[in-house]
Length: 281
Length: 194
Image 1: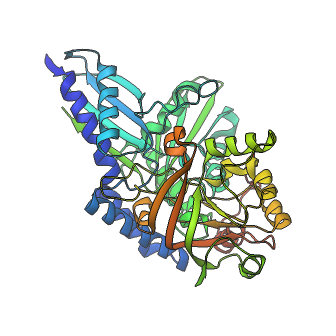
Image 2: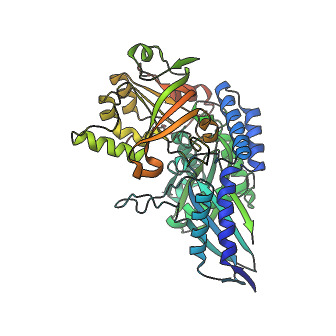
């Protein structure tokens, strides 16, 4: 049995909120540099250079990389041998978000209700919290700051089994092509396939939360990830949608079993300011 | 590189073409979703707007809070298409320029032609870098909206690109066509405004 105190969760979330918004990960920076090498459009190269310069400036001066510091997605993987002490886990996560967004001078971007009370909650809470029970005594927190420019261009479809692989590929390509400049390309593409209506969207988000360049353990999906990346980069969207070779930096897919009559697919896009970090308590 | 200072005159607007790199000096105004809603509600009620839009430029941005000793926080552009359904009344009120990221609906591309106004883009996702071009910032309306309040920004060499000009040109269509290397079995449609 491992004990995790909510105070430690709150502190970890507070720090993650600030860190992801100020510091672009080393791995992602490698992808920026690679994109700069691969891009042929002059304006595209200029934009990628700005992205690199912006990441350096933000880290140096401790400024948010982007003004849309996002909705906070908090994904907890909790071993069934872990006991939470000191209070409610969800409250602790939200306290961490509120403190991180205040102390880090991050933008508060949530409204109380989508339709009847669009008033800013003032502290960027509530976070979107997902808790998954796993084996053992692990306690992992993955934090993602998700801007809405890319989130708004994400799509979900309930395809039929007859649509098959071809249908899924077309849906991904169409989503990225029609999103064009809006999600701030070069983007990261998270795809969910299978499950049910509710599950498939979460699969796509989970795919985004995987490390940059990590491949699906199933070789069929790993191959599909690379194929889709190649085809997306032939769409011509390019940096900021102004035309170019580099439209996406990475494509990641999460899959799950589904009903005999179903083929759900979800495409969750993220901008080049792809802000995700995982820590273990 | 062209340098412009609002208010924008017809002569300046006539010279701006899709793809032009432009530096903006002087005063521009911030507004995004919630402020646009209030602008248009005020216009519909026949009330006076909190600022005179004649010849002015609106920057679609909701900055992060300024750290102590700084003028503003990170301040890059937000997605413009969300403001499309509010465009016509503002163009009628004299608005001549908008700055954001992403494409406009085809309807707005037409409206820009009709009302002789220009849509500029700034690079999305580089808000820290862009903040350095902002020399002063003060709230001029709707303070209760927090990050969505209307601010007057004093900018210096604020870099933008003309995405839609008064002649109906569109930078995205032209750019993407040049680099597409794949045959698609479907038609690519642009989002339309709500």
